[in-house]
Length: 501
Ligand SMILES: NC(=O)C1=CN([C@@H]2O[C@H](COP(=O)(O)OP(=O)(O)OC[C@H]3O[C@@H](n4cnc5c(N)ncnc54)[C@H](O)[C@@H]3O)[C@@H](O)[C@H]2O)[C@@H](O)CC1
Ligand SMILES: Nc1ncnc2c1ncn2[C@@H]1O[C@H](COP(=O)(O)OP(=O)(O)O)[C@@H](O)[C@H]1O
Ligand SMILES: [K+]
Image (tube, rainbow, N blue to C red; front, side):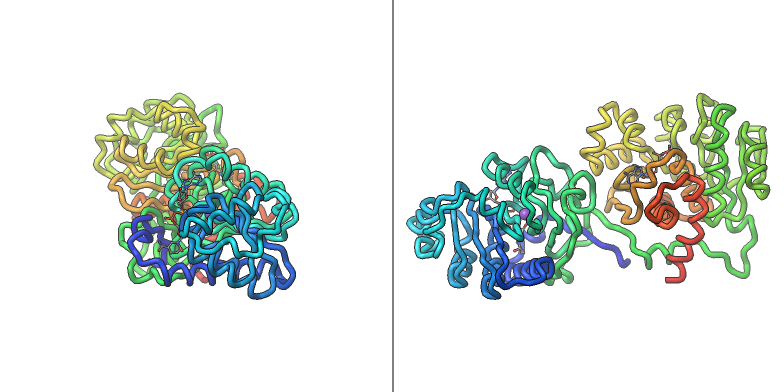
């Protein structure tokens, strides 16, 4: 699969780092140069922590200094800064100061022997505080912490991150923005806000999942030769166009409408007939051969989509389907939800259905189940505050999948799909904030339900559905507000874009 994989941190830690660090620094310096445009004469400030992340920054700084940039390293812990990196920067005539801006702190590093002969660096004359240096910089390189960071930033690091946030300089994060959790995308406390993150070897979950994703800016992956040794057990994966194209259900000569799959939509109520119409609009674009609608909004559905098979006799009597969607706009109709949950075909449960479904009945199902909560619904199911889900999306999706023994598609600014069997969680790479509009979730549930009926697994139906829905949202919006029905209309364009690419 042409997926973007994210490796476990242990992998990087296992490898010899000398050569890898040189490759990392070369890629980092190239990205900095691109951002600067003109390297010669530019002012670059490196924020340097005590680990290898700081080492990357120092080596990259040395490369920029050799091309004529004025490079100053601000050391958070002068006595523990990466010795080889410091030496390289020094040889390239870079300057070094302590985080307080006092050259003395930096100079004293030389005395410990770890950061050899820092005292001879041209920095000693500097009297500007780190804050002033950052304020005057064209580019700030965040090498405070990388995958070795633990918890929120320490106070001295936090002050530098804040100064970088105030500065007019472009901010480049090394490997990931300092202060964000590489493994989960959580941000506890202060973190660096980057314009660009140059990450090494593999994408880290924190670069793909909100809230951390927002701190990363655009992300550039530098290949440092980890390809052959990446483990199969990646934590996250993201489908690309080619993956989705292979999974799309496309009719062949032998197909008829029943073989293509019939999807049943049990949605809408007297109060919310529109949810039924929108779920059907998504289902008609998802590849099933026919869409059955069951519920009180049949007239509204037929008026908009005359091709729908409509029934008001409840799911059991509606005729055979290969998958059900239940819940959008369902109001308080617990009976219909229970009937669908008891069906022996794949079922997608959304919106009101999530609240009305009996947890034991969901767990007892043997056919696949796909649940599609947004953060508020997920929080209610888990019995926690909404913020807790928003700050820890990966954990919430995994936890719900385990509790319900169901595939869980957690919607929102980052959409995740987690399987109960474990394995990599899929993160959806498409989408736009314009999708945060009433009813767009109903379109998604119809679309993903249609893919289920066409024979995709719950994991594939959820992630392919989210991919097409996100792409359709981008096409439909194109920089201006959209209604959910616009998103449904654009699914065909998204399909073509993927399939014909
Ligand atoms: N191992 C490898 O194969 C490679 C690693 N590389 C770099 O190495 C990095 C990892 O280096 P390390 O393992 O040395 O770890 P880091 O440099 O990420 O962080 C460790 C240091 O940061 C300090 N620290 C931890 N949490 C902190 C906090 N909350 N606030 C302030 N300081 C904190 C610790 O005291 C420790 O000294 C990667 O992110 C990447 O940038 C690259 O050079 C490429 C190759
Ligand atoms: N900030 C955002 N950025 C990108 N997509 C978003 C954002 N907020 C919501 N979405 C997407 O919009 C859709 C909204 O679905 P949902 O919350 O169920 O709304 P509704 O119930 O009104 O249909 C989901 O596909 C979700 O992933
Ligand atoms: K960093």
